[in-house]
Image 1 (cartoon, rainbow, N blue to C red):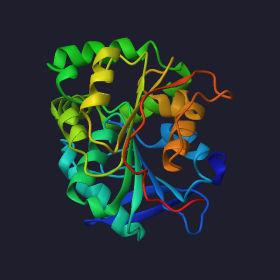
Image 2: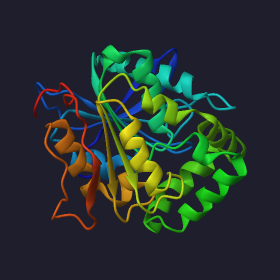
Image 3: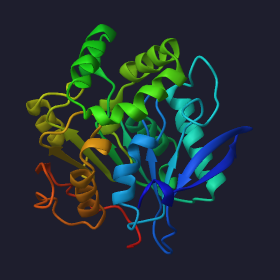
Length: 281
């Protein structure tokens, strides 16, 4: 898919308009809903969303207050954004979906799954920030600055206008909320099949030994993999590696290195339980 292949719909969520990019319809499949990070729109998620668009009808919303969707200042909390995400599923007529969240989109997706596990067929967490590793706030800010120099600079044409539109004061408030959210605790108690994907060059993620520990502490339906060479915004920089891992996970297959990708996907743990119950494309 290319930029011109995405239709844009506006749906009403609790009285507010929410803009949603919609991919090609894939009849009989479980939809995939991609959830963006703090202070930005869903535009930077499109490379991975496009790579998975044949796997299920794909939706990329701008949550309230982000991108093309107006919202309150100060920004909504993560629990409120999770409610807005579930409201977006309602407005789109989606009974169940797989949520694919990056950065703050990870805890938002986890919170939605905890609130309505019957609505969420599975969760993919790409760089799920928030929690003890990012605390206190000055530590997280330093991690974010280190990550900035590791990202593909071409993403700036999307992220910088989004940050400017969101506003620096609101962005800092949203970042603080993400940092303070107990993402690890939510992840270790995830009620639905979950794939956590961590970049080896992401300063906001725990070091490798903690990632390995997480893989062993999690429930049977948690899968943890590492994308070597990826930083925080892997949905933009490493769509081939991320989408390959997601496809394998959705199909219940072992997640192995993708020979067609630039990096390698190293499996730390393959979930011992059943894969997500999703309809094939």
